[in-house]
Structure formats: C-alpha cells, structure tokens
Length: 552
Image (cartoon, rainbow, N blue to C red; front, side, top):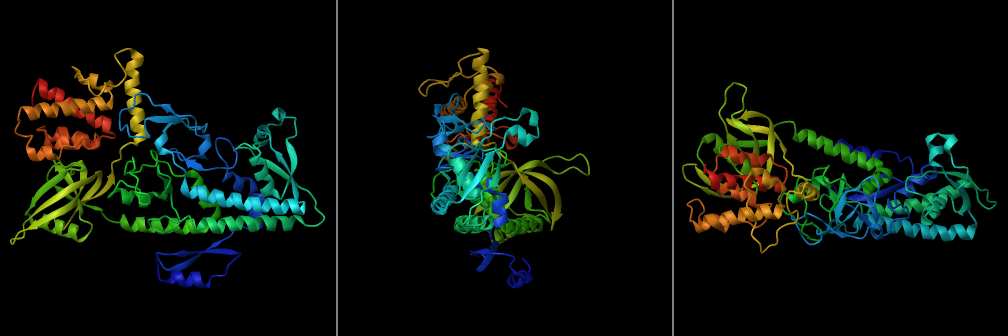
C-alpha cells in the first residue's frame, strides 16, 4: 500500500453517517458508510431477504450454512437417512445424510457437515432483536404500510396469467417492518417480490418513518460488522467459507491454514475437507457474501483491490523453484543428497524463505522446446538438514501438495516454474463417486452392491474392470491384504523401516504404497494426476493384479 493512502483517508470528506471498525493489521480506524434512508426504502425487500430462510421462507432461526453454500434454519433440515454405498471416509456424522431442502440444489449432504453458522446466527439475532424493538415502537405510534405480494406472472410481465386475487394487507411499521411481518407470518416466499403504498399517519410523515427504520438497520450494520472479521487475517471476510463446524474464514486464509493443519483454527475440530478448497467443491457462504456486499460495499471493494494487487505482485515472476531429480508424493518423505552448486543455491534460498520447493521427475527430451521434466510434481518442505564442510548437504523433506507446471525458466542455473495446484474432489463428491459406481453394479445385476463385512475376506477380481464396482473400503482391504502377504514373504523392498510408516488412512495409503512398490516411475506418476482417493486405490489394486499375475 502506498504511503499516501492514509493521508487521503484522513482528509476525505464524509458524505453521510459512518461506522468505524479498528484494523488490527494497520492499527488504524476504517470508516464505512452507513445505509441511507433511500436504501432502506427502495431495498426493503432485499434487506429482509438477507435474513430469510431458503427452505421455509420465514426469518432464519439457528441458521445452518450447508455444504452447497445455501443457508436454512436448523429445523428445516429434513429427517436424516442412512447413506447407501458409502464406505469412505465413513467418519461419524457422515453415515447419515439428507437431501438438500433448497429446491435448486437437490444434493445429498452429510449430517456431520451441517452445524449452526456462528457468524450468520449472530447477525440474525441482532436483526431479530432490532425488529422486536421497532415493532413495539410502531405499535405504540400506529405507523403502518400497505404491502402487496406481487404475482409471479405480474413480475414476469405476463398480465394475462396474473392471479385475480389481491394479496395485500396493511401492516405495522414502514416498508422494512411490514415486509418482515409478512415473512414472519409465512406469507412471503423467499423469491417473491412486493409492492408498497404508504398509509398516511397524521402524527408522523413518511420521511420520518423511513429515518426511524434506517436507524434500526444502522444499529444492526454497526453491531454485525464487529463479527465480520476473519480470525486469521483480522480483516473483513473476503470470499467467506464456512466449515462443517460452523466457523467462517476467508477462503485464502483457510487455504494457508490447511497447508499445516487439518483442524479448525477456532474450535480445533478435525475438518474432513480437501486443503485445496476448490470453489466448485466447496462453495462460498452465499448469505454472508451477499450481506457483506450490501452493508460494507466500499470496504469489500478496498479488500478486493488490495488482494488483487498482492496477487499481481506475487505472480509477476515464477513462483516455485524446481528440483529435477526423482518422483515424490504428498505426505511422504523424500531424502536428497544435494551436491551440485545450482541446487545448493536453490536449497539455501528455499531455507531462507518458507523451506519449500518443487520436485519433478526428469524425462528425455526430443526437441529444443521440450521440458526436461514431467509437468506434474510435488511441493516439498524441508524438515531436516545435515550440512557437510565441503558444502554438500543431506536434506529430509515431506510432500505437501501436487502441482502442474504451466511454464518454466532458468534462474542462476536451476529451473523455476509458474505452477498451479492440483485439486482433489471434495469428500462429498468422493462419496457420490463411490455411490454411483457401486450402485451401478447393483442396478446392472453384476453382483452384490453392499460392502463386505469387516471380518470377511474380499475376493480379488480377475480383471481391472472388476475393480471399478468395488466399494472403496474393499479396495483398501485388498491393498492391505497384499501388503500383509508380501510381509509374510519377506520381500526385500518391504523393510521394517518402511512398515513403520504404514498408514491405515485410505487417503494416505496410495502415496505410501507407490513410494515403496518396485514399479516404474512412469507408472507411479499416474497417481499425481488423479482427483480422488478412490481413483488412486483402484490404480494401486491394478498394480497388485499385475504384480501377482506377471511381475514387473
């Protein structure tokens, strides 16, 4: 941020009433304009809709933001059912689910993903409290408004299909309060629009009623703003994402947290969430996003500009140093002997920064424009270094994530690249994939669709095609049984040190399995391009089939 900006902020002339919030990052006050009477008058319906349930159309009560990003009352969540053909991850709370009550979604959500939205609940409670106070004042002052629900055909401009009935009534308060009363009575659908006619009141003018309602909305705006700071970056939520435990963070902030920990920064609950946070798999909190756009437009615009400037500066050059050496996998260790001068420099610079660099597998080139490495790689973080007097070093690293190299260049002798992270599907999509593939077997009558009991041995299919319809848990058990057989045979590549790292988590197992199985690197490389745990387990089981029929 340029040094002139604070001076401009201090000398500007306010155009109307303002709210103030303290920015803990810069130790300065941030001013934001409060809603105006004309906004409250002209946008009364939209303001009330911010606090309205998508399912029952009444004011939100104990709001839950669903995995699809839509918000409903907790009581509007349908009766849960046992989810069929789901064996992974099979965590408590994911065994039962329900179909989304919002008509334009229809997805099946896991019950464990749906806790009360802490931030939205606070905003809703503040609004409800102000409405109660306003209602009492309106009743005592005999203020009222004529409000009519607009026919959907009327809104669409098709007068010939318009309902002849006049759905109108006179309700207490101005436009905002009358709209809230209609919503509270259950007579105004979420998507419905209304029209107003002011009812003359001898003791007070329409402008005074608008100003009175505006004061109540401003109180909500000021009080709610105190809750709208992300607890990671301490700034206004930008692209808010609500976790399964009901806590909300900026998407980019949660992204950074999940690089290091799978636990919620606030309540420490373990999150069944992919750390890459693809917007298509993990939609933003639509209601909070709309609320922020409505009440804090200017501040949101400033946040967007600052983040875009930071992004532009960061992406001006290549972002990842590339070590062209071997095949590495996420969550697995890679040990390197660094002796070439160019890689000594690269590792030294990595250690001066965040300790990360990319590992890519070398490949033979056939033309001058070919990259000397495969495009998919693994981001590694240095966890231990042993240096030697002659400048060489032994480093221990651990895989963090996967990436694709978009373009590359040379800096001081070593390769650098512009990369993008490779994303897995969400847990919800993982479950849907398994249900679809296992369910297709049952529909086609090819075999039993239910998972095999834990105490029963899984029969290995004779072909790779037979793996496609097996439950994810069965795939994991086939792979685990193979490891046990190899251990009994004392194969040389399955050492005690390797077995000490044996993971029981299906999400980790394929990476471990690939790192120890004596298979060609080009074959193992296929895992880096996969998008689901199930897909990786099927590849591992295909290797087992090949191994036991004709060893590599």
